[in-house]
Length: 379
Picture (cartoon, rainbow, N blue to C red):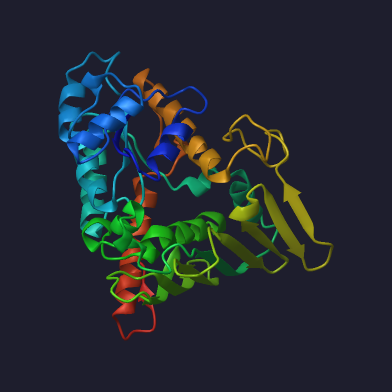
């Protein structure tokens, strides 16, 4: 693995590196860790990489890595830059012949997403978007419950992710993460709804197995002087006829990472929350409430996609990223050995899921500026 971004002071870079290398299938061999040359070099030294495998730019990395023998060069790049760089780095990596793992949002616009999809198809390279919630075992269990009909017909979905870390203008204090996440040039046209709202929309679609078909949105910027939204509510309509509500906030004082989802069906309700990620709470209409807890890799309903460690031993986010990387590494290995792998067998989110996120965000933004009650989410 090579890495674009994720250098010193990066929040998500270290998560990706640790998760990717957790079970020994992936080795970090090179990187272009920062747009600042000195920071890029210092980051490479901190990671004990050979100086000649630490690059000043991502283009230099792809050019020089491509000249190395196949046994030495990186097989794929992990892109953990600010949002505005996801698209150009992905395109350059694919042109260079490398597989790609990319943070969300996949791109800033639908045109970029469509161009990227065409490039992936032309090059035949693997592409993964790290919608890591698919790697959480109990989220997968909830999805199986819905698909199996245990809850009956789904009627309503409620998903929320309140945070409080941007309740004041932290971006003016030199805080790196706050600075780029509130900067339209690097973040894109949306703030809070893009940063954490896309995760919520993806979670709702993944668990219910039904796409969001229409939205009615309200985005607000509460902190004076901030150019992007820091709180948002979205009414949802799903393709299966169910309805929902999504609330995200980064100005909810006292909240840290309050990601929570409830799916209400005719026969029962399933609830999952990140603060207790190894458990599902199921409330039945006609029998006592149940709590299903992940105990071990062999727990009922758990597939083989998780990490081989007992429940409760790992942070859910780190564990979930590790599951995504594990699936990706397996597929890369198959491709490198000459096997043909169908997209439905990949086991990780790809360009289709990344494009869904972009379509959701564009519909939300259109809704905010429209007098129409409902805005359709494109397909």
